[in-house]
Image 1 (cartoon, one colour):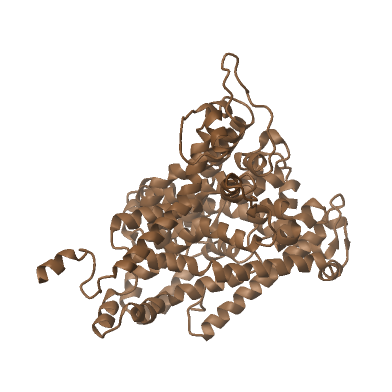
Image 2 (image 1 turned 90 degrees about the horizontal axis):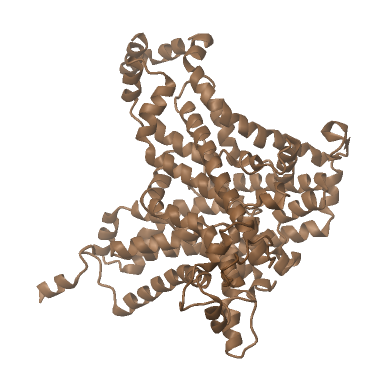
Length: 328
Length: 306
């Protein structure tokens, strides 16, 4: 009872708000603990898992500065300073993987990014509710598949023993195998990403579209704006915050273009086309067993990604957009 | 005249919008059909092939587009013991145990973090939110899991990915939107936190909890790389790893029950492969009606409030 009256009083009279807050702060820790310990006990198991599988491993990145020997452990291995990083930066394999990653990200930015927007505009323009619903379910579905499954479907359609090759053979043509052609690989992985995730990516744009006030369209139309003008002056400004947000996130993730997708197809097209930073970390660190080197490449990826997202967010603020987070 | 034009208009079309041209309408229809076909056609071909007996597959020269004679032989064969059956059981078990484990921990933590001003509220919340900004990296995670002796243990497939901060934030946002009066009255009636959670909060957030459970379940079922990293023992492989081996690497897993004595018909190899693909699809199809109803709504409102 006393606490309830306290809060009422502080809410009703802003003048007394400050002392009320101070008084509440003075509640002894022991009393607050007695009140809140069940909440703490509920949070601790999940937080503990994150500490064990997220935060402690983050600290273990220190092995990048060591010549890490798994048998000696972190304590027994020799510190080598930035030696591993120097070795990494002068390794052509590392730069190949970085260039591949950035090229694939750029490719996806151009050929993947606009598709969910176009898909949302298309579906939004469909008036029949039933058609809209059926289409939505159909395009969401592949999002729930694993990469192995998505690539299996592509293999069955476009691979050496796939439907396309089968039909070409029947027509007496030389069969194409798109699944192991390194030259068209960027196109292939983008097509796979579109097939799997364009429908899911559309959701957020559909939500943004439904948040646009219909009276804006009506006003534009009565002022004589046609379809295209309404798209340009009403729809796109309405989508702009979401587009900027997703571009920032995409930029922040420029160095993680995908992992399983490339790992699975690396055998088929070769490391020259399919080696991205994530697979490079895996092969150097775990498969080859150079753990320090793998950790160093991982740190490089993480730090550059963090810097990229902070920079992109700053740019968005400068352009007057909301961005991912704001200081308020 | 006017009544005729009004009649032709779609009832949902706003009055100010022009009637689209027939060409535009036609193009839109073609686009929609094309998109739907691009998604459904590969699944159709794989499904039909998995159901086709030897003769039909030979006639079509491989994959079957138009169903002829159908048989369930391939499914009977892979599900009657052997590697595929074991992989399906492993995947199912990991998915069930993992999902229960993740949902219980996430609901508890989300509730524990749902009251502003409780002891350590902010620092603990940060422990979860910071995971959005950076990951530990592959090599240190690998060292941790192997260092804990989880190699070749099913827990290696569950523990490292058991808590997803995004799911937790979604749950927490819902819990925080529950009217404060409900908590107050429960407390006056003498209910403790556990009772409030199980009797008031959970019944009110069934839908969002189910959505989160689904997210986790799909994640566990689809997990592939964790198994590549941590499971060396082939008999413990989940379905995704087996699928990759069979369909993409062309390994023919031994250990099929084979033709059981008395049944002479053996399912063709291709049908068996396609049947394994279909098995991996099944959970996605099972959750789908549910997704239709709750998923998008829950995800979007949750994310906005969080």
